[in-house]
Amino acid sequence: MATIKVKQTGSPIRRTKDQRATLVGLGLNKMHKVSELQDSPEVRGMIRKVQHMVQVVEG
Image (cartoon, rainbow, N blue to C red; front, side, top):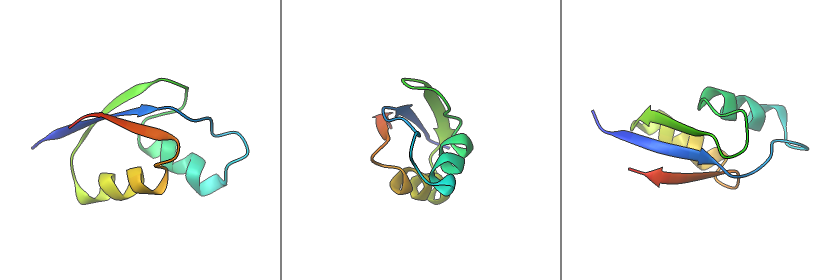
């Protein structure tokens, strides 16, 4: 299965609880941290939900 790398570029300060939980679900909790995940529709949906705070580095 293909993988995708996601980097956190925005702060979760003053964001809703569900957006913070989505970042944790993606394995991100600090600025500029990179997480490698399997490329699936569920992960793509999570990325889309917090697209203003993450950047797809590779994939």
